[in-house]
Length: 305
Image (tube, rainbow, N blue to C red):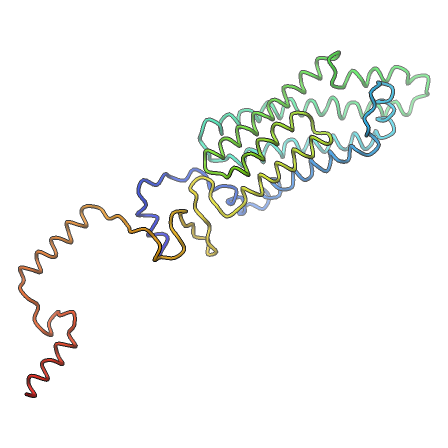
């Protein structure tokens, strides 16, 4: 059965809003961003385990740990500034083409996420690493004030500015990702993909450090892999090996397909054809008869007799 002909006879088929994540296969760079960014973000989160776990509680111990690993700490957060941008692009591409309210909310929330979470990474990540690196080059007597300076750049109720920036950035992340999950579910995505994506948004609000950051990125990658299956999340169409999209209600076996519904005009045309044939009289043997060969054989036998 020709899938193109079946698609034309589907009653009230809604127009496709988005080709789904399978459409990203035509863009290798987008595929690299969508699948590679959560892997890279999880890797940078796990790198923070080197020399920084268990995380010390006192300001002096925190500064000492940062000073001993200042180069690694600074490099991780510089890389994460780029990954924040790529992660926002990946979320945008997941809902590209969707016009629902949830999709619009997701795209709007990406802007404050980019602004505030990047600012948070610059303050608590890059700035603290630079302070610790500069302090390592000073005499011990001059480093006494640096733990307090490093503590002022961290997340603490005593320092509301970094804390407020962190809360706005993580809240925007949660709204963007959870709204994207809702939009994809409304478009027909599976529960596996949408639940994993929503959990990534919720767990990611705790922070990008271990263990919550890597866990959130693993859930995000799980959602992307689930969406990458050969199924259109908006039309339910399966992708055949030849690249033709077959609707979900049309089976691979033509004998199992439901009968096609024809318009009323076609039924009237059939009735008119039957009426014209009845007025034309009986069919003559050998002239338009459906079994002309049999009529000819019968004629030969009569002549022979």
